[in-house]
Image (cartoon, rainbow, N blue to C red; front, side, top):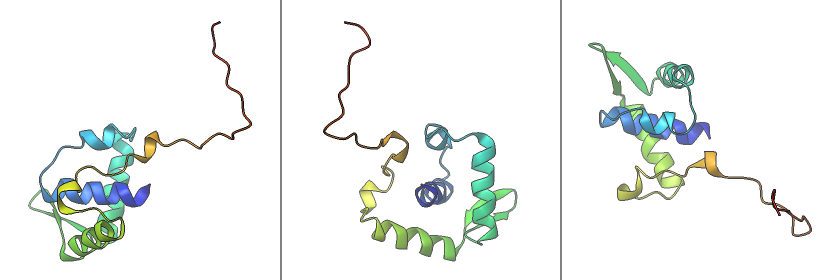
Length: 100
C-alpha cells in the first residue's frame, strides 16, 4: 500500500491537490507527513520556496509505477483503494446474520 500512497502524494503535489484523498484512506496527518518526509529523503520531492515540488526522479518514479500498475493517464487519479480490500473467506465458512 505504501507504493500507491507514494504515487498519490506525487500526483497531488504535482497538481497542487488536496490531502483529502489520503485522509480518506485512513491516514493521519502524522502518517502523511512521514510519507512526505520519506519521499523527500528519496529525493522524489524537494521543498523550494516553502512549497513542495516533484523532482525529475519523482516524475520518473511516478511514470514507472503508473505503467507497472497499468494505470492510464485518465485513470491516474483513481488509484486502487487498498484500504477497502478484505481477505476473501473460504467457501466452507458460514456467515449468520446478527439478528434473526
